Image 1 (cartoon, rainbow, N blue to C red):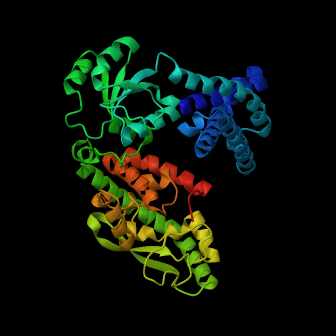
Image 2: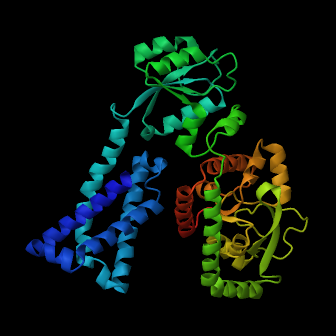
Image 3: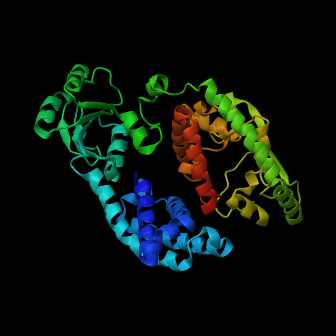
Length: 449
């Protein structure tokens, strides 16, 4: 919604600028001189810059200082790109005079649209009053997330639980035992109840919740709410077992598997053909920079725990891990060669994986594959970690574009939460979103070590 509003604002501002500039000749400029197309190019460039600067992410939307800082950065970068485009292709881009004329007209639109967006989702018409049932790990995570996300449109009134825990650090008022729900609904006009209990046996007021649901109160599962807000699974919840077993998803259709394999074959072939000269040059530079082979081969864990050989450009000194175990890369890792640092930062070391994708070891999109000893250790320490192996791994994935480099057990727990979310919601549309985010990560050089 916000990106569409921004697109309309940019289009309107530059149409107004063209009106002021050409007056009665506006129709000639828009139609005969392809003015509409040129304004469309301006709009696409600015929206792309806003997207790369995370202007549609909740963390930025709710931080006013960060929002305006990045908005101005997006306008500056977008304007510079458009000026370069004008020098290269002057026929297809607005001339600099009209481009600069439209910039001041943009600010009033943004001054209105951004506060209006947050105001709408914080207003009484959209905000729903909610009560949390439970006070465990899932409940505390939900409370923290909803406090951080005013754009979610949920106002928490408090929580109910079987017993009050004075040591609970959730920042929310204790309203009593679950049997007070009926009175709370009447007194406070509660719109929804979020059930986030860990152990529900004998403590969940099923009949009471069914009665409230019949009266029109929205009764929601805490795991689903957390998943919707964060686009990841809450892996610390005591209910993860039943959620994995009974929730919708985890049934990959044959059509999805066919599309992923067809997509992998077509685009890996195209990628290999296009990047072959570049890969030859990279291989030559690697050999000139340090001793050892240009291609690095390493065993990785694939679908069903099957081991396969992954191909990458060598970015570290030959024999860097002499103990036979994989040690995660650190910031400024001394094992990396001079060329390797550039390759890892730009992700060009991953190009040989196109061959892995072509021969069926991997998809373009999926959970990132890791080495056997690392996977074995994580499987022992993290419950349900092996669920990542239910689909083929990928060169990029939801965890890779949603968080940084994984080096600790805690990092890998969070990575698993994103991977499980992807496996549950795997689809063509989701893959397209991940590809767009991957492009953003590559352009901005985020997360590499």
